[in-house]
Length: 466
Image (cartoon, rainbow, N blue to C red; front, top):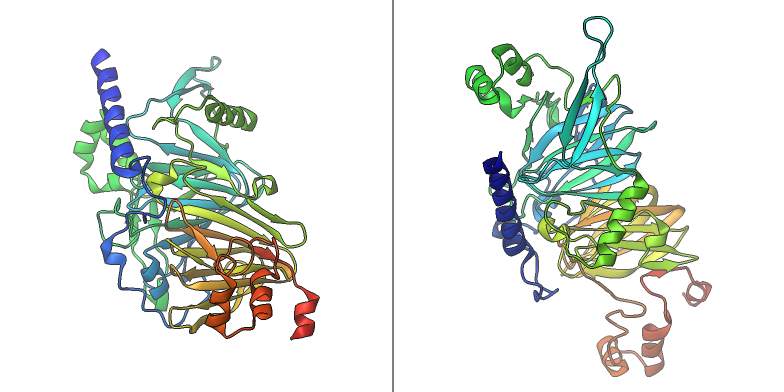
């Protein structure tokens, strides 16, 4: 027993050291340093035209649907990412799996629970469950131990490192809709740049591929072992080993738990108090107790707010430290009717923009000053904007809601107009000579937006002057 505990502690310590040294880096690291991304992701962003994208392949399961975006599209190749959208019905369980690339999951709709198994960490949750009646009258109680289970809700961002076993369950009354972005160009992925999902349970029909090609069957990894050796490894009989291989399971990767899923989990208030307690005490999070989620849908968390225009909420590794390991970040933009985001570019990241509601007009310009996108982005569509490409977004009459997943844990943005913008930081003389403006015109260009930051509302005087 002691040797087992020592082995578990040693493994946990080894993983913690690797995490802090190899992934997190020094606390003196410059915020301008780009995240570690594979060199192979370079020289593939020769894009002349961007397009609003929708899923190209749909796979149905017993209790949900998985939509795949075409990762071979040049926009995905440029950003080095892969994107999936899942719909999980009530009492639907997304079976345990792992992937070769780290991912961020944004909960567009619904609520549920999620489990992330961190290698080497102890099973700190214990629950007692009553089994079905045996031999007539008496019930038998059994104890279960497992790692922490988290509750999630609409607006949450979940961080899942590569190679970590992950499962999800919808314990609400409405479908869960989640958009997942995987960073296949992250150095943590030592395979090729395609997304590879390794099922730990079940089997999945891949469905009909693009252009009518028939998909293959994805088996769980236990199916790849001989039944005899698998039975020996688990210490069970052959019949039970065959069940683990799910040879005849046709339910897909999202199955229905007919009697619900009874697992021990803290209440939402207990989770919040525990998280606040950690930040108040000032202790650095340890590997096993690391937070994996944070909400960016709550208006109270907004970083930028304009009462007539909307709000912007960012999530980076300063707010959620596990993102230093994931090397990704997120941003939530909510624009009211006809409001716009200041023209801007991402300094150190690609941006995968997904429209969660409403619709809006988006324009994107490349390094040649050419318009590579000028069109409408509506709910359910995705647009990938490469690093440094300038963009401008304006909401339609229904408003415009976006979530952007970015390929840096500390993504930085430079605006062109408004307070703290690029033009605001330049001398008037520079603007006069750069654009051949009079002094009065240069001052108007620099100062008209006053103290407005990032989100603008329409101005009648600008339309009148036009």
